[in-house]
Length: 218
Image (tube, rainbow, N blue to C red):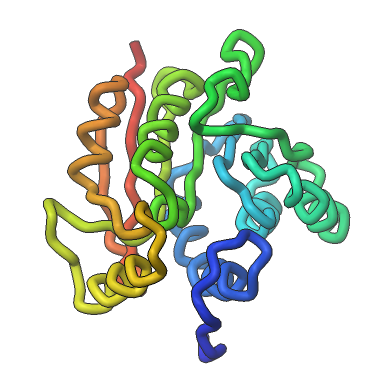
């Protein structure tokens, strides 16, 4: 993909986020083809933003029902528009989910999920959001389900590539205290505290990672 990289802007409807989403969506789709259930099930996306990822993935998995969510309700119209334009029948309307407010999480007695997806969030969010992701997943995943996280991360305190170190420098230079790459080790520890286990760490294009955290069957 040769499209010029736009200026860094984490807003869900920005040109930068759209560029990044187009760049990574096929690599993520390839992982999901290997990992998503082959039978009927429900998939929740946390921080769906514009809806570009879920609206791209859902048509490839007609047997699954996809549930978009976000803390920012201003993006809901865009998600609904994508759903309508593409004629997606296996995607629900978005709901508000604030990772720092458990009262906004769905009632596990009413809905549990086979898979929860989180894409490109933590580099522009405080680590408390990462803790919220694993806490929410521990509560809302079915036994045997898994949390899928994608993005750039440090590994045991080290950058996996010079480009990731430069990206971290660029993020931190923006002057937002919590911007920067988070560490897989810290996420793994937070997941363990909530009963989830890192079952796989996959190398992805452009020095990103796919992390799969599983919930035990019992």
